[in-house]
Length: 90
Image 1 (cartoon, one colour):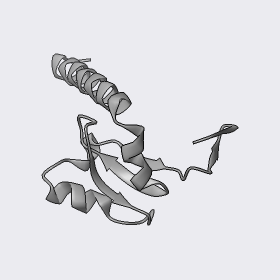
Image 2 (cartoon, rainbow, N blue to C red):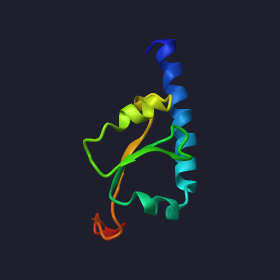
Image 3 (cartoon, rainbow, N blue to C red):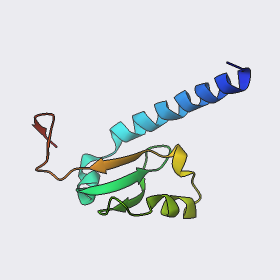
């Protein structure tokens, strides 16, 4: 692995650490409005940049219009409150 690749991996790991801390601190009540939505998180995990109930919506275009690289943002799905996940309720 060359030094540039190692630097990028370290930078990515650092950014993901920040994301995970902020994501865990994100208020669960604030996510309720996104139930049954596909979302894209801000790279630092402090907010949601885009959301849609349609799985084929072009959320990447919204993210790009906001000035962010979609490849550097976490995309996820927020299930509704009555959705079972691994035997539990969300």
